[in-house]
Image (cartoon, one colour):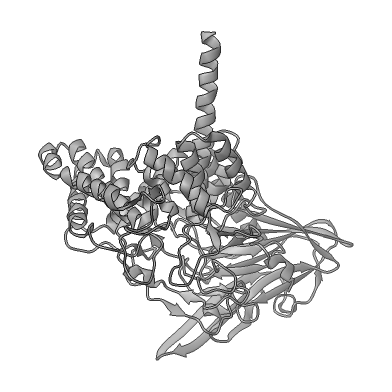
Length: 617
């Protein structure tokens, strides 16, 4: 194993809206879960190089020299060169529309690898080492017939029997698949790994067709992406990454397709992100609509609707990709963790937490989506019931402490941002009522937003710091307060907001666009990495207050922190700017797109203003 590729997430994501896989820059599959995002892993050497399992391709007498996505697709290509010639590995997961099924793309739990000679007769070695179910038990692989291998694992944990299997279709003989014997690559060879035993023959022609259909799908999808201006390629790549992270069957958007990649190497801030957080809903819907992917946005809104309570059912902060409410957290003690950062976790105990910001996120989504539902009286009536249910909850809880947006696991506190989002919930409920012709309800419930605002301004502002703070009575800052202008709580030119932006950058900024979430110690000590989404929030806040040059400089420096394929993780190390945390992170890419569009709009508006000035002269 070549450990030099482990430094900075030099990996690409392939997927098809059902699950995803990470391919390292040397063409090694290091993380993949089948059949779905939240399933057990087939490969997870990313989390344990000895026990996790992986699938590698290497060149005898050669090395990987380049990796890229085919333009405007999620098809990943890794090229090798050496003394005997050159070849490429083309990795993808099939996704295309079947004849007669225009609405639902075909997206099987398959990983396809095509080995394609480019020059000479390169000698290639395949290393197939699956470790099913996170490598908890031994995995055995046997050849069922020519061209078909089956890998299985069987075990028992706390009285529960486990059985898993995957199938590998390839024309390569057993010694070359399981034994790692080198061979001369003289024609296209394929390796199709699947969760299902296939009903149709898998041969070169079938694989060639899958590749062509998948490429056509992605090119068509990208063509409908609104990505203007100088940041077009970054917007497109981020949009393609987001599409990979939306679970097609329900519309849920996973925070990331991985688990337990640490926020700091060697520490314990390692979480499972293969779930959907309600708080991401507002930015998700807004950004997807801005870039023209309304179907994606609407599918996500319907998922939010399905998981929003109608009367007494409590709203959770997060759900499984099918709407599961129980996400029991477990540790996998047999895995060492990414670069020794244990524990490795599956499930996420945060689902039990009370975080009051989610109510504002939900009602903001409903407010954004009213026009979409306007022609469906039945849906509008359901939505209105949910709006009133959420509003009643906010009336009852807004004065109470919670865990906050950053999911502190210690004592509850009065987080300012949670109060702001309670204000958003109250404000949007009244706006929705007015739009739906419920003027009497709107008038009688208008006072809640005013009361919450007054409370925040009284207790959330620090005269000593000259800024809004993280919690009532504290002297700590929190980057989430930079969203006050985005949600309309403050006008961008409000002196208190301007002061908060400046003070946040002064205290939490770490140079060249890096911004911490907060600096105060939490349940695990003081954080030591910058939160990527907060960096973009900080840039957007600079745009709001008119510091355009500083905003653009910080944004373009952050773009340099994307990996070689344009992907971003959850965090950035403040010392060396390497990526950390789960990867790629949906929230980071949403914020990248949102900030790029804001800068593009600023540039366009300034250009128009300059033309008007010239005309006036």
